[in-house]
Image 1 (tube, rainbow, N blue to C red):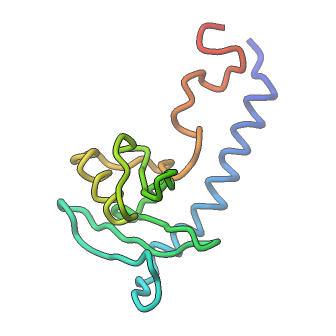
Image 2 (cartoon, one colour):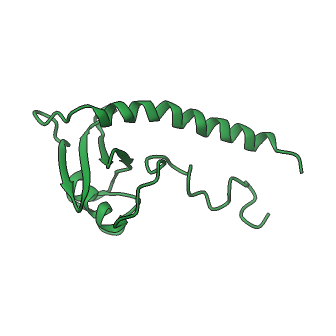
Image 3 (spheres, rainbow, N blue to C red):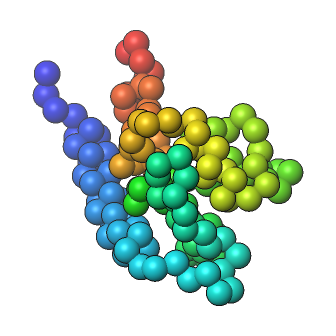
Length: 132
């Protein structure tokens, strides 16, 4: 079976996105938190993990768990949820990050936790679905 061009291009795109965001997130993780005027700043040990938050590009909150990005989503009610704990809206990014750590337990976060569809595509990238 020949290797489809679509799969190759999708793989190259995923690598490019990972490379582009990996450097940015690494620099964000390495710098100390600016707690002065940053409304999303936090840096603490919670349940044996280091959790950090800060304002990222565009004024959106960025959350890191042990240096790995955690995607935060804003709810219609003004609260926050994460992919790990998306059943109950939390009042702040800090509370949402703590809820995600509680949900993850001792499992490490994926390198792709901040991406959309890179690690959990149930079709495996097949446009016809799982059984095609």
